[in-house]
Every structure is written in C-alpha cells, then in structure tokens.
Length: 202
Image 1 (cartoon, one colour):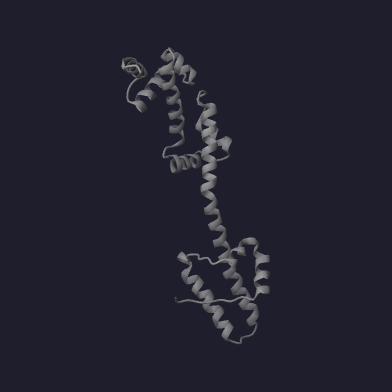
Image 2 (cartoon, helix red, strand yellow):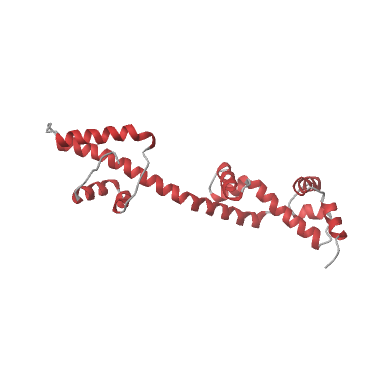
C-alpha cells in the first residue's frame, strides 16, 4: 500500500466532529471511500500537510489545522453521500408502493399519472424513473395493467357489455378501451370473451 497514514489525537477528532456534525461517527469502524476525480486534489492536501508537519514555518499549527479541516470536510461529504445512496433504494420502494396503492384506489377513475405523482410529492419523471427501475415499466403502463386485469375479470365473470365495462373503468369512449385492450392483450375484448366461452369447462 502506498499513501499516507494520518493519526489524530482524540480531543482534536472530537473538536472536528463537533464542527462537522455526526458524519464522522463512521470513523469508529474501518471504512474506505474511493477518491475518484479528487485523487490529485487529496494528494496535494496530504502532501502539504506532511510538509508542514516536518517543517517549522510560522503559523505552522494554524495551517495544519486548516489543511486537516479541508480533508475532514471531504471525508464528511463522502459519508453523507454514501448514506444518501443507501437510503435511496428504500425511499424509491416507498414511492412505488405508494403509487401502487393509489393505482388500486383510482384505476376506475382514469386519473392522470401527473395527479398521482403530485399526491406522492414527486415529479412525473421521478415517478416514471422509479417505476422503470423497480417494476420494469413506466407509471402509465402500471395503471393500464391494473385496468386490463379488471377488464379480464369482468369479461370472465360478468355479462357486462363492452360499453358498460369501459365506462366502469373510467374510459370516456369504448373505442379507446378496446384499442388499449387489443394493443396490450393482442386480441379484442369480444374475442377474449369468445375464447373463454370456447374453452372446455373444468
């Protein structure tokens, strides 16, 4: 391993932690943070700190504390970013679950995805990104899938007409309902029902 080892006295570390907040609590366990594009920047900070440590220039302690503060701030930001990245999947899952609950409540009302995203407190693009990441499809498609599931149930277990069915699912025009059903299922609602009738019972 090639690099620097920096040892801090406990009172100094406590002082820096009080200034930065609780982020430095992670220094109680072994951890690593990739420097990425900051490699040269950190190399310069540690190099300057080492030069001040072995030298005896005026205001040496002041400059060493300043350099150390910059390094500690960089470390604290890495800790915060990691915590945020760890929290993001859980927050995304909560948004998806919230959206699925809203879909279950409103899928018969033909409500806009924008309105549901607003209820969740996020943008449509954020909602779509979350749905694609966790459910593999955009928000509107999730809504359509729920409507089609209900349509298949109605076609199977009721004698409702296509017009009645489209109205019950919030479609203003039966043609739009039939077009969506054909595009997603591959056949028309009538053909779907006829196929069910033709299948042997039992």
